[in-house]
Image (cartoon, rainbow, N blue to C red; front, side, top):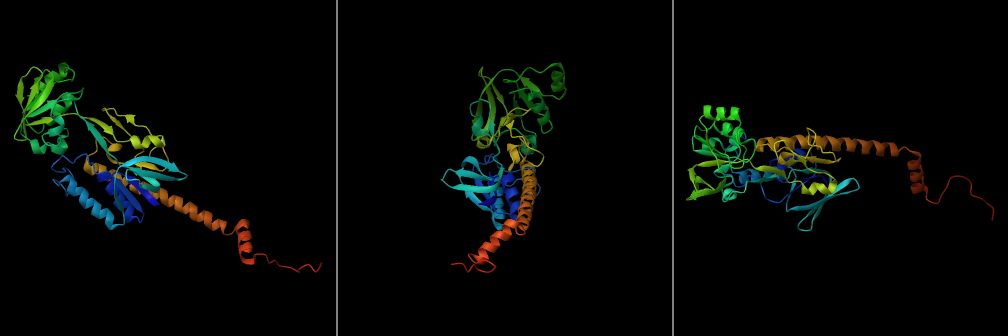
Length: 336
């Protein structure tokens, strides 16, 4: 039995575990070892850790959690159930972990457009966030793979990092009149037609191939994935994902990560699809503080109930029975 069981060992889960460990709470972190940013060469925008390999960041996090008594468990959580006031998390190796509170930080899945070769280049020269990877592709020929109504916006965003931007409309709608003017004013080229595949030479992206066979040179390609929260485990507790205005789905919660199910918190990308690594880590800390406060309140209630019970009539009767046993005060009957 742990005070808190955390499912997911990314930046959010590890930050929460360290905060709870420093709060002298017993914590178990169950992690399947499938970080979303594993293909990336480095974490960016994380103060003091800029450019650090994502896997190295996790290894450092594991060590810090362990330093405060947190338990790291390698495995995939397969189900979550509630037993009385506690939670039981089943792991694929047969282990069952119990906790008073539950924090889910399982992140999200990037659903990419159906273009041949896209997944293989993901996190390298196929990217989606200019704040994560824009600096690394600055001044390069950057293509924007249109897949929805935000394609023009994405093209204008990446224009900040390079003046060589091409918007491939692909499955995106045609720009409206104002958007055409804006694209022209910023020198952004627009190519109509559906993208079929990518050209790669010596493990480097060199171009985009359309359905008509034409090839257009690019050095990097920005896409807009559909962000899908990894939240299937929560269905057993009655929690369902909600559609996000930007597309995809997430788990709704209050500002501290508390869901509509008492005792269950979420943090990181499972609750905030747009959070970068630093934001995810911050949300883990915030959830941990809220969880610890909730446990303190429960501990206070239990202590008060125990103290009051020590002076109750039932408690006095129990103590009397324990001390006297069959003996009683008064004169024993002399009647035979």
